[in-house]
Image (cartoon, rainbow, N blue to C red; front, side):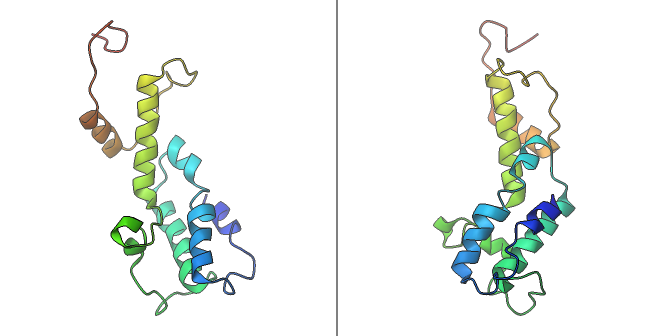
Length: 146
């Protein structure tokens, strides 16, 4: 997955792009690559860190080199929403939690899908969040088994 993100970097003209163009590239191309993997399987923390490092280097320096002294703000601030005055780059950990929660929601609400009965491997924090934020109404006893 990390290599797939690295392959999406523009070959030579990344340093010639304006920082706003690099921001759009990070948001729409580089962070779009791991979406399916984050939904279907939990992306390991080391892979998220590597992908963030690739995106950070490309955004601040325009290429895969050291960014020491070139970062204007911390990457955590870049990943905060634009409503808070930041750049709105997707935080991969929170996106992974949201996608896995949606997967659990679809499994619970739409049981006509072929994959709805398959066991889903999710992060324990996601499972706890999902249980705390949903309720099951006892009605026809098809969804609430006793």
